[in-house]
Length: 187
Image 1: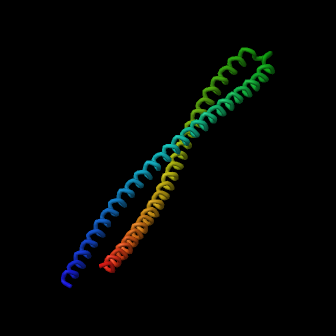
Image 2 (image 1 turned 180 degrees about the vertical axis):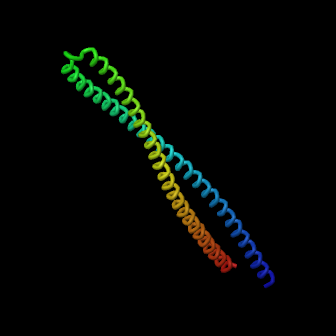
Image 3 (image 1 turned 90 degrees about the vertical axis):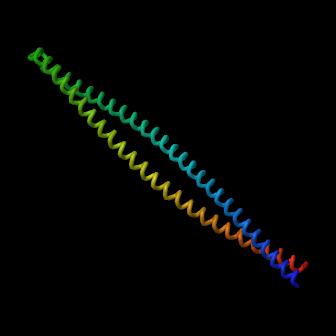
């Protein structure tokens, strides 16, 4: 009886030590997997941000080039209309005031060109400033949305890993209980 009790105590201690070693091993494996997942999620998130930034930059350049071309065409059409208007005025007043009208028309055309250039520059600067602010706002919204999704996914993964770890411990405990019973019956 004393030997049997000593063996039971020794088996219990040995089983407890084995369970503790397995628990430590599972904890280390769980931490390594969690760190690897977090690192992969960070790299994936960085790649998505870079792709979105490149796409937004390309779209912004295309829109800016299209707006500049449209402004140039509109400015050319304005100059054409002004030239036609002044041509009609010139023809009607050519007989009476040829020299005076030529000088006055030239000065008016130069003033209009300077005025149109200043207006065009002001409008272009305002548009560029507005596009930059709008682009910054979109980037901030995208960053906030990605941060919220990343946190939700990370919390869900941590909960799942905890449940999986708890299930592993339960299965190991049941397995060791069956082994203990079978060894006890054999003895």
